[in-house]
Picture (cartoon, rainbow, N blue to C red):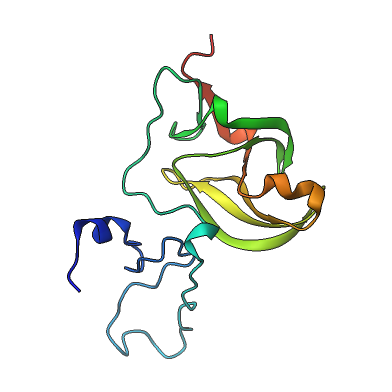
Length: 168
């Protein structure tokens, strides 16, 4: 079929697929034989189902100035509204972290199993779409019933965010 404006917007730009959750961008196209045979081939493309990661974004999201927000400390891209904060009692890889119900301007990598302080979880690292700083992770799956509430939620380390808009 023909291209539509919507399919063009939803297309994953690195690999030109409509998968919504690519984790490894393909190597740029090159003519056959352009690299010496000693150079290993690029890694195979891996695609996650759309629910496993946030969809790619063409534009940055800006949260309303009337809302208290958390922003990336490195580039000031908005990350979350204060109303989306679930808990301040979490531990990230490098210190204190907050648990959020939803975030904006964030991408995520491939899911992997990690043994965290609260047990085994399937998590995907998340990063700022603007400056590419790793911020924390998304809980994809919790294997213990007491931890199921974390599924689909996001951890952002406090060292990577700053409060903005209306905190005074």
